[in-house]
Length: 283
Image 1 (cartoon, rainbow, N blue to C red):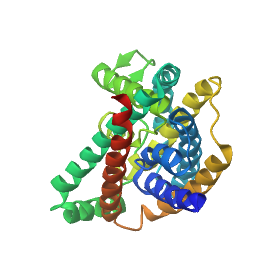
Image 2 (tube, one colour):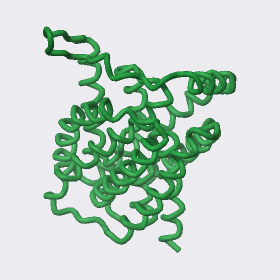
Image 3 (tube, rainbow, N blue to C red):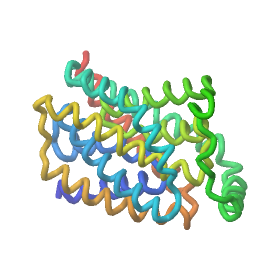
Image 4 (cartoon, one colour):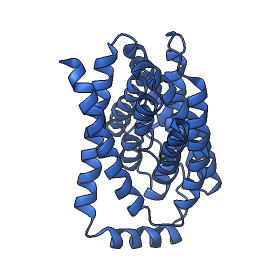
């Protein structure tokens, strides 16, 4: 029964990652802790496997749909690996109660941000979707001809933009390494603002970034001696990956606004429950 609940949660994780380019990964840690009885250290390590493999498969599916810019995603992901390594190293030095409390705080923050976006854009969501659909129908795939730093024929640097990318990527990587989350809720806005990606490519490209940062963090954590229950992790990963493929296909065919709204409610509910479990342990 527990594995069936975990499979259902894995489907939600995969759908969110595939259709929305992020968010679902933040559910992996609570699922591993409260449904599959893992410790916080085990859960944040196992989550990297779930998130990394699901994102990899989702990125491949999104690439087949033409919604991924591999070059920009790969570069952003490489920049983010520094933060991922530092975050993963720091997680092994933090007490588990504090680790879970930090995760609960992050989850509450993400839930509030998602809810604020839903409330702010609720009234004009339909007009925004119509505009995006029209743009997607006529816009050509953006060319990779606007580099931030060039060395030939002369050196040139869009330094403010480069610093924005560096700062955002480092934060994303640190969250991935420390808490075992993919950071898609940060990656998508970063790709929109820092790299000026069109919205129709940001979700798919973010999966490339999440794959790279998750792999880097997992490589560091592999030497810590913390081993999750691999059976549970494999089940969760398999269901999540299959759902990510379906989510990537749905992204071009359905209005994801309702999925985002339902996901916001779910994140807030899980965040509140996680906080009620984590905070008393610190007292």
